[in-house]
Length: 370
Ligand SMILES: Cc1ncc(COP(=O)(O)O)c(C=O)c1O
Image 1 (cartoon, rainbow, N blue to C red):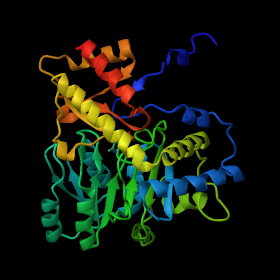
Image 2 (image 1 turned 45 degrees about the vertical axis):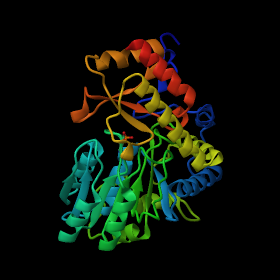
Image 3 (image 1 turned 180 degrees about the vertical axis):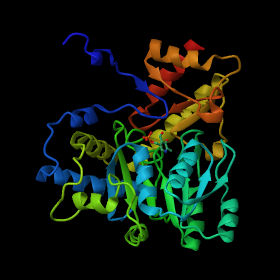
Image 4 (image 1 turned 90 degrees about the horizontal axis):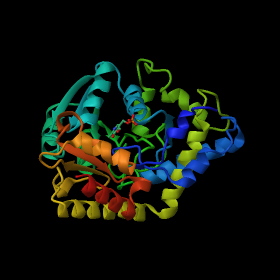
């Protein structure tokens, strides 16, 4: 074929906010022959994925499965199944992805309140406690790893407060899952979602979600139908659970091979070793950047290991640097989002990318470009 555009796709070291680089074993998994989505072998793979996700999310939730779609489909799945018009929802916001939750919940007719915190700082549990003492909410939602700022939110502490009220607790684990501990049950999380393209090192396209029994109960007591056919979990489970599986939509078969293999790799390496690799790479990156006179935007106490918001040195054309890194070195880093545009670069150290040799490749290239 003449001019096949895929000939221009070159291997790139992905060190932005996602997608991250994909391991060869996952590429091999993706290229296995496509089989029918009701083939018994495929059903066995689906059942194994549910079990793998429970292990990585640290949950016993029966309703744990990957939604077809990216992380945003996971976000919509949680809100669309749990929210009914008029429900009181509190969204804790300290970055772009908190504001997305507010938008999604608002579109469903929820009465949305927000508690906002300065970007680059974490959610303050004291303020959450105070707000929860004043008003009853159906759902309290927060982002664990705020990819727009590089801040880790205190999800465990917030979970303790939410549990005392009996509200449902909804957590975004798109960037955190795989790269740092996610303890859905221990933190009292009722609905959690993630994405495949960050620390799980699988291409974008699937959104693992998990619902507690309390969350499932809320969906069963709905007075109104879930207003989105594709993401209605009460129908999706008939394909993902039970002796007899019923067609809902055609599963993205090869993507699920990829996720199965990506989760295998993490569980084989061991979650603690996987987290350590992220922490070690983060420390080396921070130290090397420090030697170059470049600082991080976020205080060390609540920095994420896998997403580093790096302050752009004075007088540097940030877009030109990113562009040179890509064209001359085949390395991608991310720009700042929203109010942080032009102020920070976002350097991802996620999953397969989190290797010491990748950190030196980036920091050497960055020195050269600067
Ligand atoms: C914290 C967080 N939530 C949600 C999303 C949305 O995920 P996606 O872009 O895969 O739809 C992202 C994507 O970067 C994210 O970082």
